[in-house]
Length: 263
Image 1: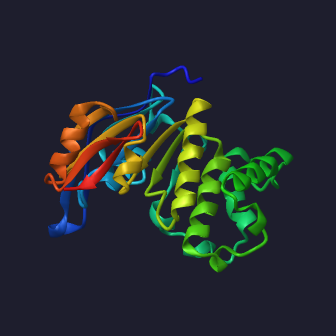
Image 2: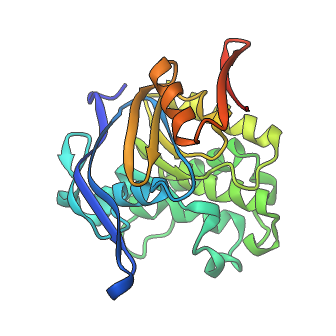
């Protein structure tokens, strides 16, 4: 189990996007602590700043303020240290077109780069980690196929395997359920629960509200602000969730779970 109670913490985090006269603030002086060894879902309407927050936590966007990873300023990590400690899954495989000619196996092996020395070939441990990750996402049978030959859902499972192959203690996933059909969404939920049971921390931006309500903790955002952060079962989380969606959804209990239904 992890020895830290907080996996990631944002202190006065601010991000502006755009250029010149079109530059606009998206996050302003945001403070947030994400619990270690838990699954946190970040939700909110379009334009709330969810993906921007996740990318800022991963240090993929210029920002002001401070991000702490397992009690240490993330800015003090070397690139290799950070890549080992914090794994990232981009939204719908953004920026992955250049990998289309790589085989599934080679794409997943990219997740092992933080563990390899310069120009060293993959080790037996690297291959074992990649095989385990591809089997976890049911992508092992495609290992010889090029990434560009896969469907959107298949591709998403390969990119998820690459993230798993890093074996990082903290995993950030931006819309990981994109292109996945309901059975594979259920597989993803089971995988996340297994990761958390191992002591890993998972933070995911989700549009699927009923699935987000299965998480341990919920971060509800609106217009670049955090309106609520805490356990999913907290009634105040449900009230804030309904409010940010302008009460067009309602949260109801169903079979020991919470679901979001249209009003």
